[in-house]
Amino acid sequence: MNAIKTRKVLVVEDSRLIHKMYEVMLRPCMLIPAHDGREGLARLADHPDVDVIILDINMPHMTGLEFLGQVKQNEDFANIPVVIVSTEGKEEDVARGLKAGAVAYLKKPFQREDLLRIIGRLTTRQAPAGGWRLDGWSGKEAEPNQRGERSSGHTDASAPAHP
Image (cartoon, rainbow, N blue to C red; front, side, top):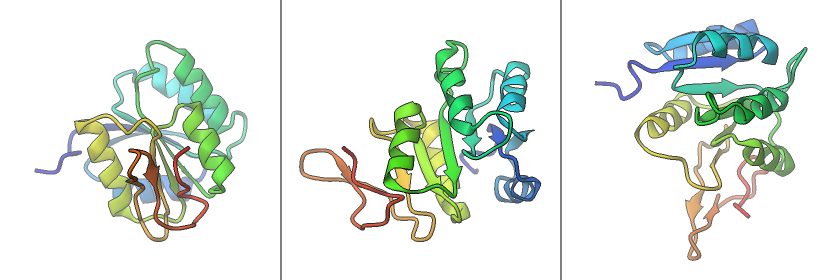
């Protein structure tokens, strides 16, 4: 049985095409669509039992980071894991997203398996302290180094070493 079969996922993304892609990629999850941060907060209020939030950064009305800040400040929603999926993948973008409270950062374009792996892990255990960072092209996950920190093993800005 698929580990994410019964998961409820809030998708906060302004692109209707990307929403359609998620419908196919995350089948049979129950998806709750929102097209900007404001709508995301309204949907979250209506569906406080979501298991995971997939969040874009660049959206109208309220950015992904503004949405994330409000979610993490609300004690009813603060523990819901947030996965940022964005075209913004420079080291400072990833660091800002993880510092704001996301548990993983996936750079577009990405592989379906990478997103499914993250969602599956989020439903079975906590994310590492520094969050997961995946390069959408290679799907390489950061690995722990000798000091227990996570390092990507490559130089792509979307998967920098953990501080």
